[in-house]
Image (tube, rainbow, N blue to C red):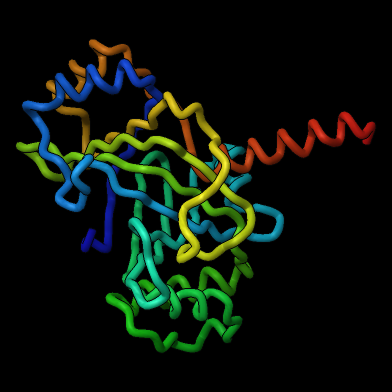
Amino acid sequence: MGKEVFNRYERKYVIDYDTYEKLLRDLKPYINMDKYAKNDGYYTISNIYYDTVDKLFHHERMKRQRFRQKLRLRAYNDVSLDDLVFLEIKKKYKGLVNKRRTKIKLKDVYDFLSTKEDISVTPEYEVSNQQILREMAFLKNFYDLVPTLVVAYERQAFFAIEDDDIRITFDKNVRRRKEDFRLENGSHGDLILNPELFILEVKLNGTLPLWLARILNEHMCVKRRFSKYSNSHNIIEELVDKEKYHMGI
């Protein structure tokens, strides 16, 4: 989890439990488990997403604009205010994902994100990459970003044995909450996806290797668009629309 700059393509699939088990069986000769995983192979990821008041970043994705971006705070497993977390900028252009992140203490990142200092002021926090933090200072102040959603899930992650730039992850129990924007309070939230379903992601720098393409094809895995952040928003918007309908609004 120490890498700070990523440039890669991300392929996503929604699969059921039976397909998940069969995929793991067939992938086993080609992959190694992420060294950060716990005994059961999973760890918890909790994110706070920041957006404009009118959800600009969310709507960029829904309109399928070629250039999209998001700012999020990410923690692994349980954290306290003195623990290090990741503050990340994620941008996507024509399918290529660029992610830049820096380590910072949780208590410091809350202060940084809530402070509306002039964008020309250099942030003074103890971080692993000051340049990336300066970029985030510009972004959060230019757009006047606010915490919008907490999205959490359990992840099982693997690397390809012959090419550790190829990463394969399975996410389950995807959940969200639209209040309590404090990661030290845990990863609780409402499920946005059937608990029997997994989000499979393949992250790589180029094309799929033949062995991986063959296995995905054999199990009829079809690539699809899926954003945990935007899908969480869509569920909230659907619930609001249903409530308005029943109220006759």
